[in-house]
Amino acid sequence: MDGLLIDSEPLWQKAGQQALLPFNIELTAEQYHSSTGLRTPEWIEHWFTHFNIDTTHSNSTIDSIETLALNQIQESGLALPGVEYIMEFFAARKFKIGLASSSPLKLIEMVVDKLQIRSHLDAITSAEGLPFGKPHPQVFINCAEALGIATSRCIVFEDSFNGMIAAKAAKMRCVVVPEATSVNSIKWGAADLQLESLLQFNEKELVGLGFGW
Image 1 (cartoon, one colour):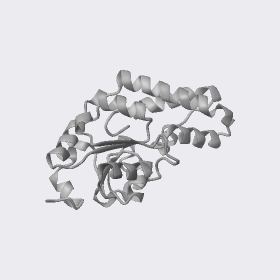
Image 2: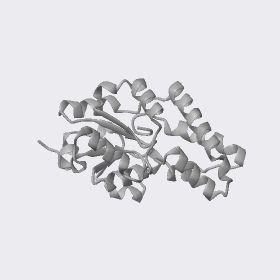
Image 3: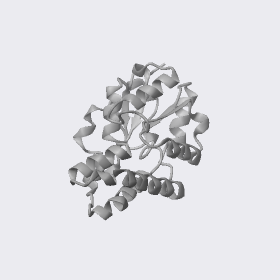
Image 4: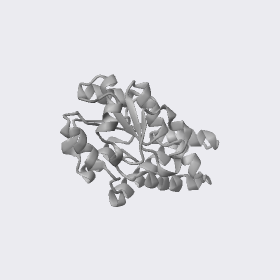
């Protein structure tokens, strides 16, 4: 969802940067992008450990980031190119469509309504309450179960490295649409297909993934 359907990653980044400032932490863009796809508690654990920050501040910092991000996304988050196109592409071919995200469910619900895509969705799953988030595959496995589809018959669209790893661990095909500054990274080599935009996906790509009719 974040960074694929809605241009919210810069807003998550801004929220994270604001919440870390009291600890004199300033992440580089490279550092931030290395941790996209993680749930906020894991994101905080990762960077607090990296910078040796007292974990007694973890819960309040998590709350701060999620509140800031939700407010900013609700106010100024914009749909990324191809959202309606990709939904209609798969709906026209009678695919079931699920949304699986590391974000809290309240944020997912807000984005679904903001983008007006609820009518396209057959299932929504969040990693919020799971023992592990991405790169663990459970959120994708749960979504496949909710759809009633074997994981081997699923295509995941992702923008993050952690999400790609989760998709492949779930034995799903994975199409990555990375953030523009990282499109040339070799880390996307595990994906089944890499695109610059959802608008590039068509019948040829579908057949190439083994889903031709």
